[in-house]
Length: 199
Image 1 (cartoon, rainbow, N blue to C red):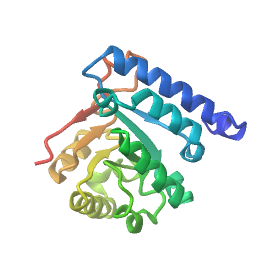
Image 2 (cartoon, rainbow, N blue to C red; image 1 turned 180 degrees about the vertical axis):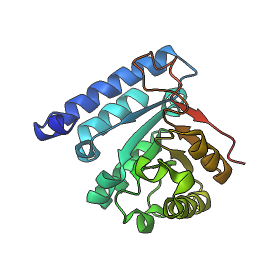
Image 3 (tube, rainbow, N blue to C red; image 1 turned 45 degrees about the horizontal axis):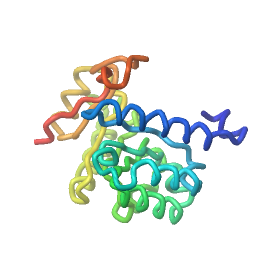
Image 4 (cartoon, rainbow, N blue to C red; image 1 turned 180 degrees about the horizontal axis):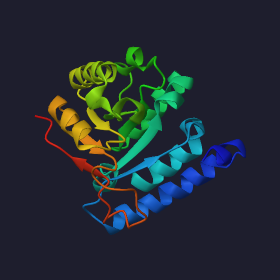
């Protein structure tokens, strides 16, 4: 992906991924699918027009599509990102803020950034059962996310101890090797992210 961005091809990749995602959502009516997009696509109006053409007037498709943008991309141009997120959500899709925590300034923007889900960066999740500093970070984030009505995803859950800690804290979703290894299997058959009871 960094090479595609450097060569100026990331928007083409993101358009192709969107088209592939739509085929899967149309084929499998129970499938919910998340796609990651480049920070460059956040300012690409043609991608947004393409999304509008594909999901406009099709709420049964739109509500099952999640668009993920990284915190770093969101903070790079906050106003453009805010407009992009608002437009995507207005179409009925959900938006997830990926890799949260690596930007460090995200907390002050979280209240005004209308995303549906916050994904906790794996650097704060790995070994969290034994890391008090990361525990405090996650507890703070979870409290804020709940107050703003956002769901949470913990990335890189790799041990039972970390999974137990996160479940106890009320993380909405878990993703990582402890639940399933990355695979090239068909998306409808893959189970790398499982919902849990947030209690």
